[in-house]
Length: 137
Image (cartoon, rainbow, N blue to C red; front, side, top):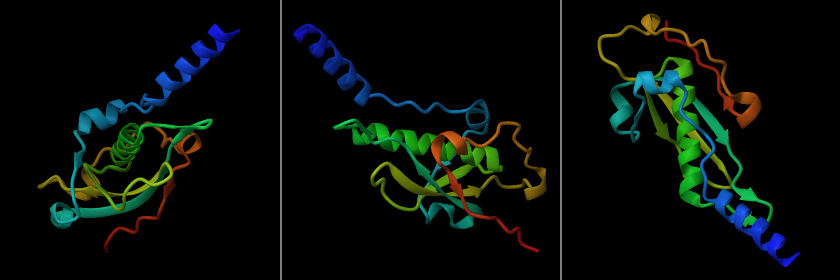
């Protein structure tokens, strides 16, 4: 009984240090850049998106670096799906939530030339909230 409780506790502790979100093939192919707001000032703004991931496993808190990595990966995946090539964190991760800006920075590529993604956004799994994008006239 004690050995089983120890094994269960060990398994939960090991899972608390894991990241669960992986980059999509589209995000890997687009080589999404992580920027600050100043670096993205020359880029075309597309949208802001809020992501949510699990930051606790029962009473155990996940490692903050793993939560941040999952949020960053979700932002990169969403940028690829939206035709962007850069993301900018709008705030710090808090309670498993973070808002990211999505931009298109690639020089010489008109907005209409971006290939649409064939992968659906991970909204059902990650509770992604995407704000509407209105293209300039």
